[in-house]
Amino acid sequence: MRIVLLGAPGSGKGTQAQRLVQRFGLPQVSTGDLLRSAVARGTAYGLQAKAAMDAGQLVADDIVLGIIRERLAEPDAARGYVLDGFPRNQAQARALAAMLKAIDRPLDAVLLFNVPYGEIVKRIAGRRTCSKCGAVYNIHDVPPGAPLRCTQGADHPAPVQRPDDNEATVSRRLEVYEKQTRPLIDHYARQGLLRAIDANAPPDVVTSRLIGALLQPVKPKRATKKKAARKPVAKRKTPKRKPAAKRKVTAKRKTVAKRKVVKRVKRAKATPRRVTAKRRAAGKRRARR
Ligand SMILES: [Zn+2]
Picture 1 (cartoon, helix red, strand yellow):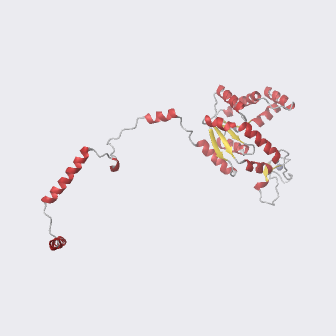
Picture 2: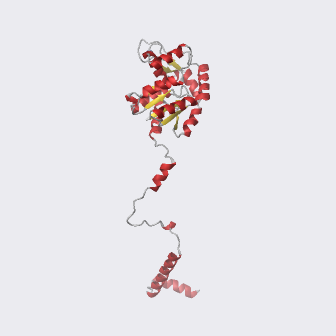
């Protein structure tokens, strides 16, 4: 199962990526984490990435792709992966497709997280982070007026808002997403890979929707549909009779039906009717008229 998660910042991709990883036993390939790890380990790509970051530049796509390719070559990614944070634009999507084709590991599905922007702004503006352990909470998850505390330790300070998590910054990030990443929705829909999820729901609900979307069979392509139709059907021993309403009225059937009626009338005439009290009374009434 080779999956890409697509959605605006704050749409819950990170949380759900971790849940999919647990549910399906796949590694999460998060480009942010991979870059940090490559830099920390001082790999060839890591050194190039560090040079770019130190110069205040974005890390070039080919460096990110190189790091992803190295990660996918590790044994735990043989069964699949959950790719998170890449691609973010069409050029990256094309480069990723070419790289995955080269290593014969094409994508199986792209999961799109649909969340209204208003909800995203609210969510991110409500984020609070523990400065001691990095755990992330949301003021909208606790009852109004209740204090927000870090659950990782009694001595942890009250979680605070990170400078990035304010409405102005979020709006800017959403603008970038709208302009660069949103076109990928059409890009992957055309390839038949896109599966859209209503992600404006509690995390457990979103998880079950994601799993449902992943387990549903992919739309069959026309070629396979035709093939299936041509499959020989096992012959029945006795031909199934069509339901009466659907039988065609043929000339032969008409004459058969007529003959049956004639026979019934003849038989009725041949056997004299018994004279009952009721019939006698009816006969008398007719005679009187
Ligand atoms: Zn903490």
